[in-house]
Length: 289
Image (cartoon, rainbow, N blue to C red; front, side, top):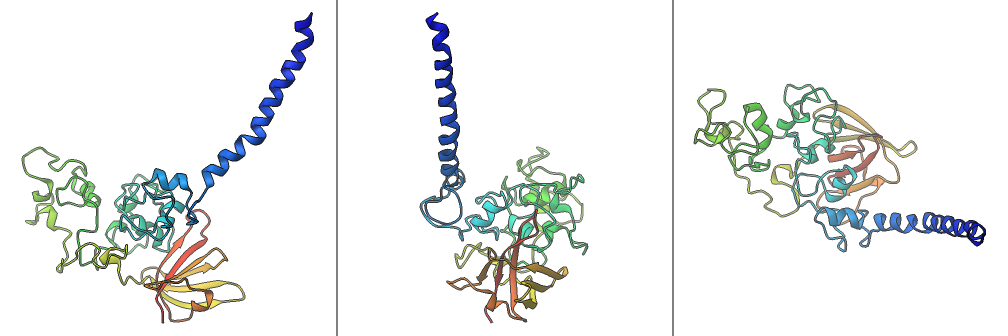
C-alpha cells in the first residue's frame, strides 16, 4: 500500500529532475560550444579541433597559405591547415573569393554533376577553375602535392594517376617523371611557368606569393543610401553586392579596418568573400588609394 502511495511522489521527482536537466543542462552545453575566449569570432571548440589556439586572436591568420583567413575557413566549413579542404583541385581561397559563389570549399562536387569543382569552368573562359591562378603565377609550389611526386594533387586526376601514390602504376618511375599525354614533356613540368622564382611566402604575410598583389577588379560605385556596391571584375564582368553592417572591409597591408567611406570609385579590389548560401558579402579586401 505504501508503495502505491509513494509512486506518484517518486515519479514527480523523476520528472522534475528531467525538467531541470532540460532547462539548465542544455544551455551551458550550448554556451560552451559557442564560447570564444579570445574574441576572434571563432568558437574555442572549433579552434581546438582544428589546431588553432583558442586563447590567441588569430582570425586573420592563414597557416595553409590558401588565401582564406582562419575566420573564412570557419565560416565556410573549411580546414585552416589544408589549402584544398575538399580535395577537388580548387584551393579554398579561390573557391570563396572568385566572386561567383559557384562552388563550396567543403564540397568537392557542388553541383553534383559528376565533375570535381576544380575541373569546372565557372566563368566559361575555357580554363578550369583549378587552373585559373596558374596562368599568371610565378610559382608552382603553391599547390598541394600529397604524395611528393612533383605533380600537384589538382592535376593527378587529369593524368589518371593517384594523388596519394607517388608511383601510381608501380613501374619504378615516379608519376612526375611520366609523360601521360605523350607530348615529350614530363608531367611534373606540364604546369610550370616560365618564371618559377617563388619561395612560398617570402614576406610571411600569410598569403602565398602568387596571390600577393591579386586584383579581383575595380569599384565602379557605392551607393550609401542603398548600400549597393558595384565592382567591375577582370574575369567575370559586373558584380553587385549589398554591404551590410556585418561586412568586413579590409585594407591590404594596413593595420586597421576600413569603412564604407573607403569604397570609392576606382579603388582596386583584391578579393571578396561571399556566403555560398545567402549571397551575403561577408568581407571585401581593397587597396588603399
